Image (cartoon, rainbow, N blue to C red; front, side, top):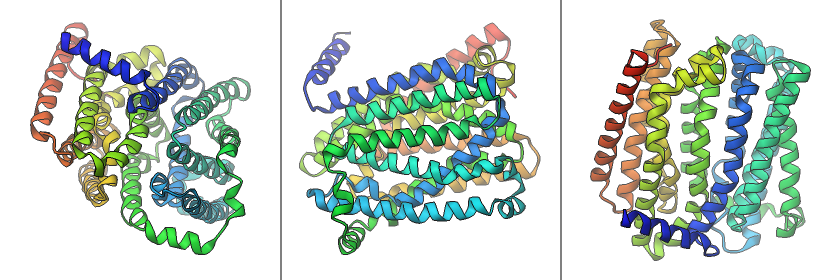
Length: 465
């Protein structure tokens, strides 16, 4: 207990110290708490208004936005923190801006020829005319990512968090109001486009004092080409890994989109599970990327200690909530969101351990970037994609049911991210095997405890569809 209290006192002292890792992480954490609160309060109301089918249609729309946005980035935004001179950094931003323009043109062409698209992919037809909002959401989302990375370069974490959290809260309020007044299934898509544009205006205004006007005044195609070549490892290594990761997470959506209700259940479940990942994992990773870049060469031992400390803190914070989630999400969802969303609770239970291991590993993937070993992540995500498909496709073609397909996806993903945590700890010289085995044993003990509680209270051990 004395040791725990000493750690807490040390952490509090670091939080109070200006421009420390702990202070910056706490700033991001505090802002993301507002997002968590809004999601906890408003999601039950929004879910009851729209229903699973509307969430399924929005899940497909969002999948298209995220995939196209990946090609506007090509991983270059991760390099924003590296150039020492601002004019060289701006060339990277201009490169991404150009790629965005190309993808917006392609998205517009697809939207204008939507009948041909729906003929080729009939399961996408529920998107209807609202696919015309795809270019708008693409612009808003992509530029928000670019601006966030710019503010990370400047260590303006409070500004980034304020805009991001405000946009998320506004989006939920819009979805709620639109659903009550219009009672249509497309409020989620419309809100995504409108609030995205408002957030973009806020980012632009906030970066005026940081020289956003120079973005166009100093345009140089030669400079852009030079930076594109200098940081070519990002489109060659970072981008493929990021895109394979994204595509791997969207496999249930793309595979089961013939039933929008099932996709909606999965989409809501995934979005709620992202709350702790954004609140805890991404709060720390936003600052971790900057700290890792500073210490990877100058003090690798310090980087190892920071990595181990982050791993252990995230493990203990997430242990009880995620393992309890595995055994009681179906009951909670049925009570809070209504019986129509009970299956989303079962899917949340299936994904509980997957997102727990993702929480304690994904915030540290920056280690491979700063060590210039991005290929490790590409190999990992590619192997994970193959393993997922090897399990999901046979179940899908055997008509085993959507629940079996999603359960197979989650089981493979949980094992994969447990292995990823081991890889990251080992990369910083930590006793990876010992830490992983200890974490796994503690997790299994927690699961046995909650399984026993469920059996004694509900008469069964496991949620089922």
